[in-house]
Image: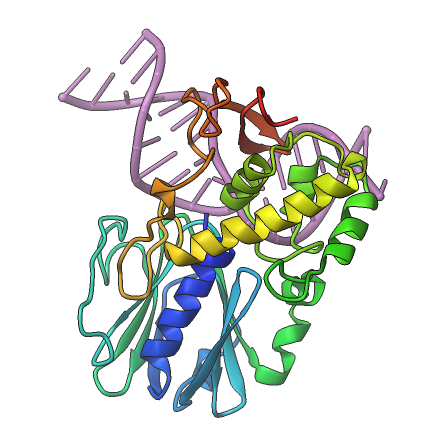
Length: 280
DNA sequence: CTAGGATCCTGTCAGC
DNA sequence: TGCTGACAGGATCCTA
């Protein structure tokens, strides 16, 4: 799913391609669009920020476009700042196509498309000074690669008996970790995802904290995981899905070579992958 | 506080 | 071949 590494890859791409462009007009066919798109028109794009899995495109007129792509949202740029555009097969229906819900017409013949075939994502226009007041962002916990410390992490774990995997995916506890990286981090730390969080030892807590940071860094290195619909603003796929440690590997041998086989269960309603043999 | 279910939506896949 | 139904899943909301 689009998580911290995917959204950060999108942020970098958008920053590279969009800064300097002016939004000329916005065409919307989408119910998950809030606010007045007219406030974007004439604004010049200054920077692109990320808060957990949410993006904020900030304009020089005091307004921002805030976007959560959820599972299947895609932000694809076409224009003079992109020399080698890609068109991944995951861009179902193409651009523009039947899943294109919002089109941002930019100056200098640039275009930004918002595609989302499951329509879970949302976009909203707010004043830049109010971006951090948006509910999701206001509740967001610190990020593992920026702000979250081992001490805070240990406090979060000890505060609850909830299953550790559910906890690390809770955006109000820490921002950016979703299903793929939660599964892989727990695998790397050799911890059973079902363990009550407050029962982890100090050593296990440290190991898990380091593992979360490690898998997120790997995700960033491969520019994200394209297992569902994730593509970069250039229209290309990420590579992490070919390097996942346990995610999606049910029935296959454990990559720790412990002799175990990866098992898939449901935990908190989410597909959960782990090796019952070496994840204790 | 916590667990569990429903909700949003549609491509994919299993079963008949 | 073609239809039907189950399923997945981030975040939120609701109930128990």
